[in-house]
Image (cartoon, rainbow, N blue to C red; front, side, top):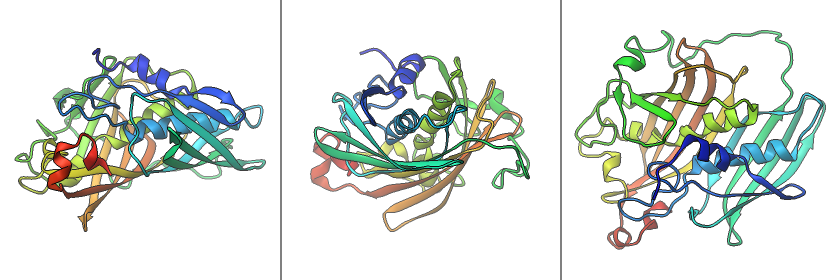
Length: 303
């Protein structure tokens, strides 16, 4: 099996039209990203990949004004596990397309079953009336150490570098700290298309939020996921802040503000290396005791 690549992932995001408001998409099932087929043999598509594809599908279904619509925000719920070996179908139902805004609901199915739904808001960016760019969770800007001093992380994708600020192993149950993770990413290619840039930013929002929520708790870490604890991303919300473009390193700041009752909530921001805010995101995740019978069933702990 070959590893995941940035080029292949961008192709996965770019869903193919099947007919009016219907699109087909595949999944990346290389090592390390959307389809985790290694290790336990689990066959699960990352929800953030489906979210990224849904953004592109909504934009294609609502081409809009001559200047085009841009996705402003999206909220996705992942209701059933998707198998990376089976094609996905995206049905876009426009809710409204007005002069300034458009909205749509994207339903993602596989083998006739609903796997996820997304509500997407699009707009045509307008001149500023007011503007500020002050990340509320990061008032002092990027961490002083920056990507050069951060630790390389094992989440393989050719064409992407990933480093974690101040944390050697983000999944280690014995490496504890505050419920915060700062991940630095650098892509060899920043897509020329606006919709693919937004899809690429959305894709990583689901990768480290559960790790941030587990970090304060000794003996609990994502290395134990699907072995000793049952985890799953249940919902992701993302909002984009124009202009959605960057050069060089970007930082994903994750902060878990609550964990309990079998769930965790994380809020985050995506920033350029000089501290400009590109996007904000939230995640609701399941963190529960693993039922003994589920441990022997690949993917059973995912919902």
